[in-house]
Length: 124
Length: 189
Image 1 (cartoon, rainbow over the protein chains, first blue to last red):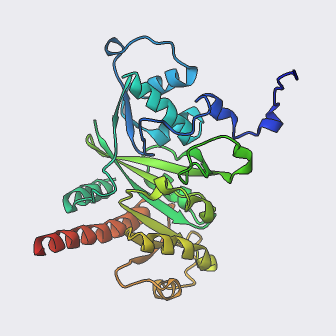
Image 2 (image 1 turned 45 degrees about the vertical axis):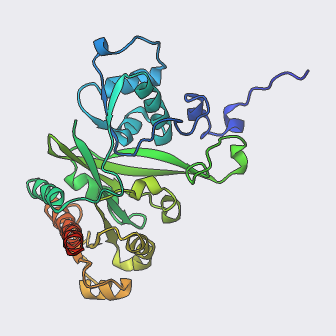
Image 3 (image 1 turned 135 degrees about the vertical axis):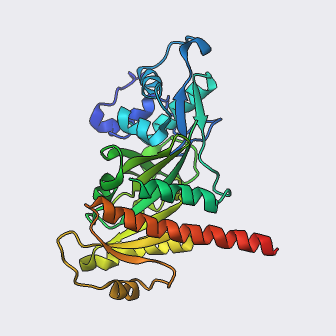
């Protein structure tokens, strides 16, 4: 039987490795996240204590003090957005985070919502 | 838990998208990347990924906390239009978009204008006059880009917060008019 061969970095390609963190998954089977889905870490006493990958532990750290968008998490961890979505899906399965999805595509913004945004920008 | 909204800042490479994000964001622009693959286009499988279409696009973005309940993210679209157009998640659900234009390379804005027009995403065009050049008037840009009368075209300097705010407010005015028209249409049914 031939020896299993390790690919070195060059052969494997630089884009493949981040997906090793997700076990090769490019999307989560149960949960869908948008770039601006907000994530908050649940307090430790609410959650179990499963051993976590370092990247997942970092997500919990980043989202402990405020709601952080998936894109922001990806920027802080220097990982592709889709990898962060998979990791967040696992954390949500484990009830370790709370998430807030953005308004659905079909749920068009109201006049009132747009005016609130305009007021906010005027005050910058 | 707050809700997040987003606005896109589009336009050709080097037109000032990141500068505009930075001029209004409460944090220095953050950068992240996504790999656009056939999986992103709906094929859910990483097997044999080498043989499939795959590219990495990077984008910059910033954040504006509107209120404790509302956070606005501004995403500068990746420079290479032909790739980010495949990234539906980026445009999906956006309040609207600013298309930044450089008068020396107006053709670089065509694709973005088409993209937002086709999807009926409200947008405004900002003509970035970053070194004081005002070779074109907004009327000439409007004609060159073949824009309808409801699309604002404004000369701006995206390094300046006030100027960037003006362009964003013009875009949101279009979004508000659309929302208002939806309301009227719904009431008329």
